[in-house]
Image (cartoon, rainbow, N blue to C red; front, side, top):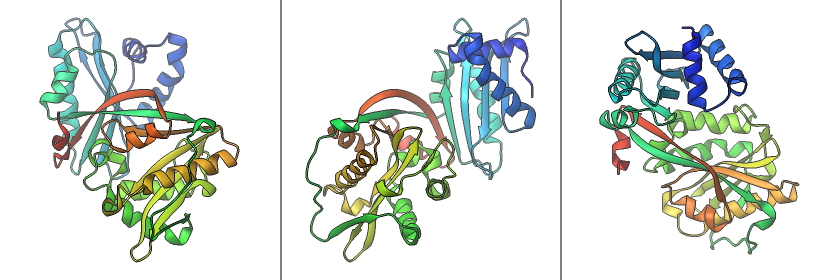
Length: 309
């Protein structure tokens, strides 16, 4: 697949950038399409000029999870063309054997696209990047309930942590909203974080990543913290459902943020699904949203429908 000049103009409009600003992003898309690492489909007007397109790639080698990073139609097109683009895209993706999940990021107003995604049983989830100036974090004693203890996350704890992660996310909103944080993908993410192989990260922050242990049941929660440029980034934080509402998540966050501050970081960040109850904890600790966006999610087993509003 290649992009012609009209399609590249569509991408520029989708990004809301000038030609110069959009060029580096479009060049990456050109290379991805030429190498077969990504794919695109479009819709055309009566003059055979492209007026909408979708660009996507497989997130994993097993080709069970597809991410559509751009779906866009021009503001003046008839909504039927937007609906046609959605139908063609989903027919293509859902036709792959083994497909489990699709994530779609809608650009601009894109007439007809939003309604068509809902008609096809996709559910929209908002996720926000949140930021905390560490010197403004409310200070309080880090106290764990009796029977619990916290230690740094070490290599010999990895398998136990993974089991907690898999169990804790089963009925969580993120098991629907974040397809790459589920099952084997979640385990692979945790391993890549610890081995400094996760895309976009600088390195694992061993001094700011903790597990919490219950005296009889072992590890029941953890926090995974990494460095991204000069920011302390909370990549994941989990507490086993049976041990929630006991202040364990707050304790993990406070320990991690204190360690980041002691290591010289000035800013902490994380990403959270807006309807995740954990957001209230983050806000209470001083985190504030800096950037929010919606994605439409589809699962083969229809788990997203439990969260439809």
